[in-house]
Image 1 (cartoon, rainbow, N blue to C red):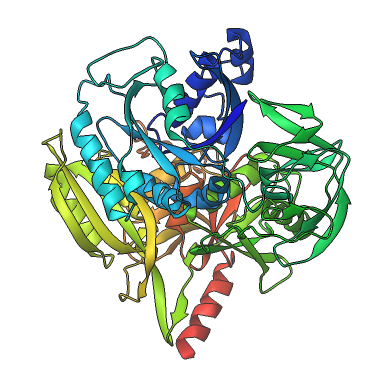
Image 2: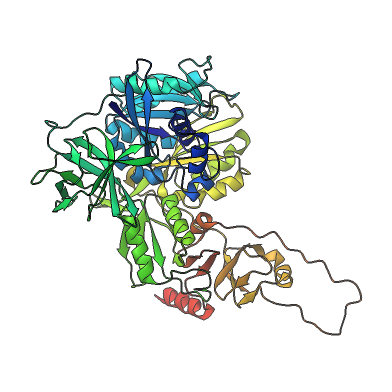
Length: 618
């Protein structure tokens, strides 16, 4: 049985996971009932097993499966499929799993074409010399423009300096949702057979390193079992991996440990099947190794590694995680202490290679660095759902000193917005030291404008919310890290001040009515607040203390007429990532399983005034 190893690349929401579901289904390895069970009680999105992945409609964790395809000539082929994340914030997942593949399926929307995240992951694939097969998905859309999309893909490959073999890519047209694919855009079929055939015909067989005899396996993914501990997942590049054999495990720092393999598992569908050995070129799971980490290489006894280590781009954003010391600490969560938070972060480091964790200024603080706000936001959201309580500080960009001068990360920002909103978008982005690269009417949608900018990463913090407000939610925004560049100057911070609660207790309708003209509120009647909590946005630049717990005085004196109707604006909802973008250096986001609150670092007004006087006198 021949083997093919492929990774699937696509922008967010271009149908990548749906395509994998169809390949699994049409391989004939499952019944409908099995697929429904795997999908958590609903058909589709089998590979998106994480709750956050289902809620957001994105792939966060890379996963792999295997299907067996029987060709018309009777030959059987095993196809290992790696489902990669489509967002650059999870580039750490992408970079380490691409080492397992020999080719890629490049999935692009028949209307939107290649997008910034497509560019990022495709660039990484070309660095690994992977052969692309282009699939134009959603070909059944009424606004589909397949010819222009294929040309855009070719231009993108040229821009990424792809070789001639990559530029000579096969093109397929598909509707993953409807479960069919074709080699012609005007021809509709009944299944995905042409995808399997393209993989067999165009993706090369796994390349065997060296003489093919010496064992070489790199661990690129980790799993965990309560029964057997860590499970190393990776590809055997050379030799044969046998269950029960003794091997040397070479860590990334060069340390070598001698260990014994307990079991070897081969992928079959979404399951793992125990087999006595794994041949070169196949992807497998290994049980019994401890310690084992991502990037470790498994070799024969007294052997040496000939594999290049996993190369991961460095983090561009950091944030302070600290113990929640607010008055409501412990009311919602189960894990509150610095030791529990530290253990959870250390556990995340075992599989999240793009994350960095350092001790903060105090034992209760940790400096956590990642690839972007979504990368760190997903970690915080997972911790919140696991029962953790903690506070997070304002995200800050990581600078680099190059040739004695400070450099900052620059992002490539792509904005598609209605033409009548163009001036608002330009004004908003121009204030953040952005430089325009291109601007033109979006192909196939004359009422939309397509703009590409180069913008500092610090200018992206808080930009999405403001841009969606400026365009009434009609702007499409995508960005990806591009390079480091000299500092571009100051960027305006939040222009409005905040309203800070002075008393603890439940919010009253009467108090919000009296403060109606002061601005917008983040709380609603009945919510519990405490001193120092940020309860709203002031209409002016300064912060002001307010009492949102004031109750109406009860007395026997009644007004001649009816009481005035209370005027209360709807509370502005501030989810986790929006709150992280909103806060300033002297503020924190309090994160618990049931609540997300914003607060001042110093909750007492007297303490804040004392610090302000000290700064002024200094």
